[in-house]
Length: 425
Image (tube, rainbow, N blue to C red; front, side, top):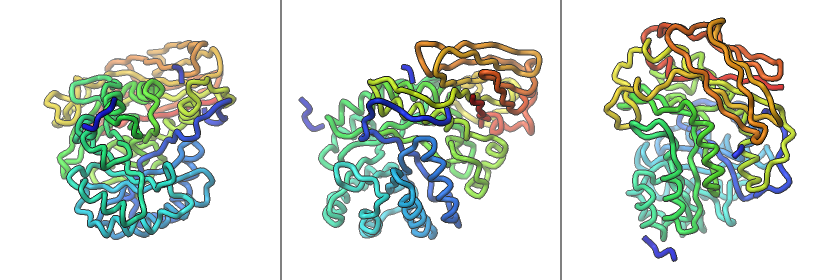
């Protein structure tokens, strides 16, 4: 290692003071965008911008024949939206990258008005690739300089700290509770900050994780009941230089916050993606992002009061787990890491009451904290609690899918991808 001597919906703007250097990006899986149109890119970019997101990290592999077309579309459409940036994230786990291949891509887009720049240099990131580290000095020379903020999470914060001479910062993919853990902490984030010795830190944030894709040997669930709320609270504790939401569109791992896009759903994931909308997670982002950029000054918020809810549509005991484990590398059944609750998150300007109900059998009223604009509540349920879910804020009601006492088709997958919905006033 080199020597190194909370408060947190839909509309409105921050703030008396804002740190314009802080940015929030969303991880976009370009590998899922085969035959995607420019119009689709335009919709995604405008939707992200409306949520307060500053740009996309464009995850690309080395061998997809559609990559060049899709990257071109992404940059061109981003150029049309003021204040929205994109940058390349080389997926080093998707195959072998040649030096000349990476150099050519960076040089082609580094002068685009949409290229995200840090300290005057084009931002470049990765998904993994610590074994490729010796190539980056050559790439710097052949591109005229870059700001390299890779994800080398497999090395951990201490390992990254031993390579500070090669990087300008680090991005942590650590955005979910580990195997056997129910909550995220900031321990890893603070270790990154310490080991980076003042270099840039990009913090990963995600709403949840579930995947069951045998062809990639993936079948696990990470505890996620309060993750979207917890992680944004932690952003305000750590105050990283950048935040990256993982992900915009990774349907196969259930971490998406974009609107439904069936052509992007990988084979095998349809059964746990279809009918499970995640768009409501974006409803609270304008305030959360504004608070992050304004901190420590409190945001002068004029947006709508907004509440969102997310939940599984069957209780744990009704599910067949089919080998699903609790967290990556875990050995314990995912049943031990999932709780039967409806999770509710609200952004309100003042004291407000929120009603949440399951059919006619379970109902509760929550009162927001007048000292904090963001609140989080949970309504527990069990196998005897069934019915349509309703969420009411300030007299306006949204209706979500029915909770049933049985798991349709016996698929753990369908019940681990939670439905999220919102109401605003």
